Amino acid sequence: MILRPNSSLFRQATPSGATSAPLVATVPTWLRRAVPDAQSLAHKNAEDVAIAAGAAISALDAVMRRQERGVGVWRYRLALAAATVTVRQAGRVEDEAALRDAVMLTRPGDAVGPAGLMLLAWRRLAARPAENLLTERSLAAVLEEFGHVPDNAVIGDLADELRQLCVSAGVAERLTGAFMAAENQGLGRYLGCWLADVLMAQWLGWTHAVPLLGTEAVFGMSSCRSRRSTTTAPPLSRKEETDQTKSLLAVAARAALRAIDLSAELDVSFQEVVHSVPAGKAEVVKASVIPGGPNEHPQECPFDAMPSRGDGPRRC
Image 1 (tube, rainbow, N blue to C red):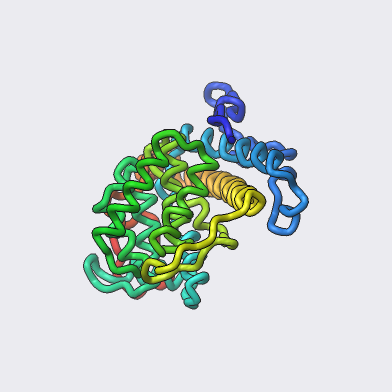
Image 2 (image 1 turned 90 degrees about the vertical axis):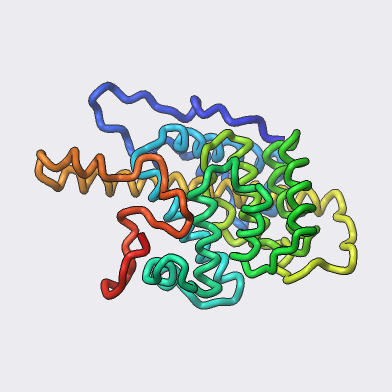
């Protein structure tokens, strides 16, 4: 069980008027070493992995609560990374540029293709308030974007399972429970990652979810299926349950550190842009960056999310 992170442990005081240090510096070296990769995970015990995951999520929580300018662009970049992993696991060939162009070089309402719909699913998670993401209406839209035919019975059962998880489950139970809920309805790992990210955001009290598990390849879970299985899967043994939880916590920890690093990179890029423009226009640049998040509609894009080709309209 992971205790609710205390984000104050990872905050560093910055003197008034001074430039804040890069966010990557707030992640201690021991934590980077403690978070296991896929190869070293088998040699770690569950308690060590849980401690490392809790610390990594605490560090990310500190970043989230700072509400740095451009946080919406950060979440959209993570959504694009998550969609790229999802598309690759689905056996498709679109890369980040192709996914971005599929959405941004078409007009709102035009068909964006199966891969483009997967990107819209992750952008929905990044754009909409976390408290609104697990409604039956939202779940129906996400199922369709991930290639499933919405079924009222499936959506109702899924919503009920998720509500039960939200009552008392901690972060570890929410991560595993999200995948189990998706598996019970025959919906597979893509939706499991999406649901797990939403449940963790709600548990931490974030106003918006952050694409995390979707940015990492999650193995050991069921593959995506088009309908409910007609057979009941045998229950997992105690060791299998422990290994599954340990694997998901390690994935969450790695994803949290990558998200922190990306936030630091974007912050450095923003500072470079501000310092490269004339003094009289610096405040205009600062004011133009989206402070709180991307536009409310998941098919809309932040102002600086440019397509990779210059020969088409921007989807804004």
